[in-house]
Amino acid sequence: MKTRFALRTILALLAIFSLAVAGCGNDDDAPPSSEPAPAAEEPAAEEPMDEPAAEEPMDEPAAEEPMDEPAAEEPMDEPAAEEPMDEPMDEPMAEPMRIAVVAPSASNDLAFTQSMVDAVNAIAEDWDVELAITDGTFIVEDAGAAIRGYADEGYHLVIAHGSQYGGPLQEIAPDFPDVSFAWGTAVDTFGIPNVYSYSVRSDLGGYVNGSVAAQLTDSGVIGVIGPIEVGDAKLYVDGFVAGAEAQNPDVEVNVVYTGSFSDVALAAEAAQGHIAAGADVLTGSAQMVVGATGIAQENDVLWFGTQANQTPLGADIVVASQVYRWEVILEQIINNIQDGVLGGETFIMTFEGGGLDIQFNEDFDLPAGVRDSAEATIAGLSDGSISTGQ
Image 1 (tube, rainbow, N blue to C red):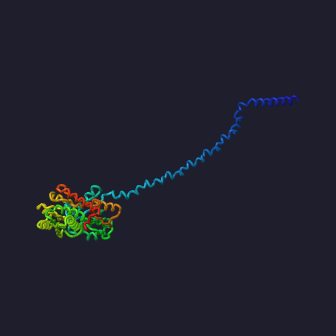
Image 2 (image 1 turned 30 degrees about the vertical axis):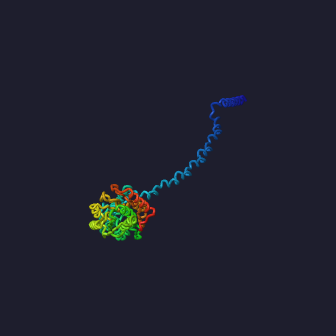
Image 3 (image 1 turned 90 degrees about the vertical axis):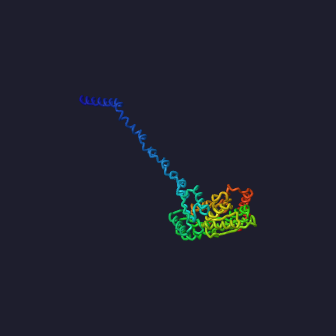
């Protein structure tokens, strides 16, 4: 019995000890007692619930910059960037305008050929131009070879400066459809789309010269020396006669045609014949007039020029000259070529626009009243109140 009591006593003591140990172990066993805390704090640790913010799907529209791509592509600015659209306007200036002149007489003939040479040189002062001149081609076959040669070399404009060049031009121009040709004095383009023609109302200046000559003659006899009865030469002669007779019906005007544009000896012979008939004033047309002016100066006879300023042929006898300023129409032709129009038009120069110009010799003592009369005649011809009859 004592033994069971002792055993029970021991077991009781062990139980009491265990309870004491359990009560005293709360501080040392903090980790086990704190384990529930992590479980309670799991919502804070459950950051995946914040994943929507991390994934930032709501910000995607801002990130979707492709919606702004139209602005980035700048399609509306493309016209400004398409500078090649302006290139056609610049192309004509990318290289010089290549102009060739084929003419029958010398470039310094102070007549028909020089009028064109002076004109293309005037053009070259204001335009980017490459010039080539073949003069002295009075023989038509030689002129045709020169015209074809320039076309074959790719000149933009070939000027056949002579009414006798129409035949070869008709044959040559169709072979070079990309080359522009101009010829005169004439009013026919032959229906060929790359041919221009040009002429001049030389009768206008002839009328002015004739009216002045009629006021200056003392003998009442005036001599006219024409080359061939064609083109601007015939117009000038007819206008001169009309102007002289309108100014003074009593004046005798004698006309002689030599049959040649270039025969200087024939022109001199004609001048001598006029002077022998009593003429104290002379005029004439074409490059052969240098022969006539020489005779006029020897005999102190007044001279009226045409085509170019002929004052250098005799500063003491040349009264005035009708000057052809071909550059006025050449500018129009060049503009047309740059616009792609290579021919098909005829140009005729008059006082309007300055194509015709009466240039007085300032060293010649012309009475003021006569000069005023000439200016009034120019005005009348310009506004139509005076007619040359042509």
